[in-house]
Amino acid sequence: MFAFLFSRDTLEGAMSNPLFLVVVVFWVWMFVDALRREEWVWAIFIGFFVISAIFYYFLVYRQDRTRVTGGTFELPGTSDRRRIRELEDQIHHMDKAYDHAELGEIYLRQGKRDQARECFEAARERDGEDLDILAMLGKCYLEQGRVEESIALLERVVEEEIRHDYGQTQMTLGEAHAKRGDLDAAIAVWESVLAGNTYAKARVLLGEALLVKGDTAAARAQFQEVVNEGAHTPEFQRRKDRPWVRRARQCLSKTSETS
Image 1 (cartoon, helix red, strand yellow):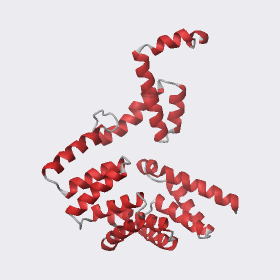
Image 2 (cartoon, one colour):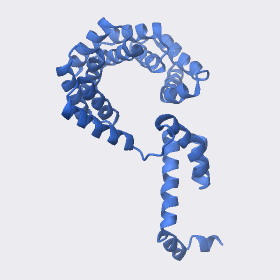
Image 3 (cartoon, rainbow, N blue to C red):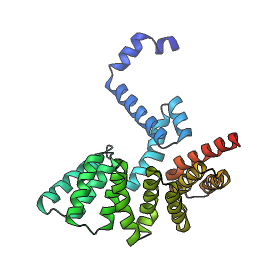
Image 4 (cartoon, rainbow, N blue to C red):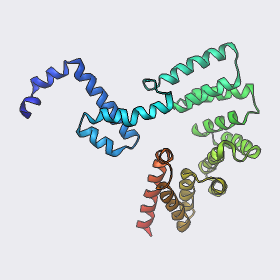
């Protein structure tokens, strides 16, 4: 039976069947999506049982897409491409700062940093007082290695509104200080962030900075807090924090080995 299923003739016949190719593409799509979401149990089931991909699509993938798109089916990237065209048309006719900024956010999300920077710089030219625009441009500069320019913009935003974007801008400022090599300034900023928020990312970054400074006990306390909090947060937040919880566990493991 197995010899027949996996014989060369059978495989060649299946490969020539369009329906078989559609099933394979769908199976790979769902398997990769499960890995990307860190749905390990689902990934195992999909890997061993092709039919599990159908259940995953309806129970996980489609549920998530429904929250984002309102229930309509779209291929990945479709909404972004449509919105880019709309914004380009609006910019052509009205040339508003917020349209440039929104276009920049889409490009930044897509990893197109040069295009994102150009959009945010254009937005700043049209409205140099908008804190959201300045913060996003500062983030772009940081991702491109223009650290001093990034710090100048982020500090200006934080000075005017310390909790801008719920502390996210301040957290990015800490990253900029760390990238410049000023760990004391970075630590002070992240401690300020954590005085009003409980971001896993801020705790991990703070813990790593404390490790470099040689304060292992304080660093481990930050990592342990991330791990402890991770077990009690809502599901949507747990998904978002998974990379940082995993990083905190890795840091705890490394510090216990060296202690």
